[in-house]
Length: 160
Image (spheres, rainbow, N blue to C red):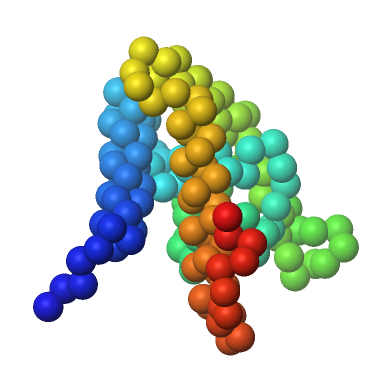
């Protein structure tokens, strides 16, 4: 028997929405004729932004799996979206940042997100609703994070 509840329905919706957004990104890349980077790599690139990061820092920031980030970073370096250099402070560590080609793609994604936000203004999905949604999702993230601690959660104090 599968457990069914409002909570689990929400968990499934979060998962579906993530996949759907990846679909949107894939379609947008295809429309633009971009074939040398995939949707996941494009989002990793966007999350690097204007920073210079190690793969470890990127993993922590984006909640990606380390081995997947390493592979995707390697592919983005090969396709000239990222530049990499050894860290001045730790020669074992490699730092990555966007190349000119990567900055162009970041600009495209920024424009895409802005276009979506503008389109949403003509719907019932107001900025206030998105703020409330973000607040709820942050609370859920804190709850799930607390569940990965060995001490667990004694109460839901601080989750409202």
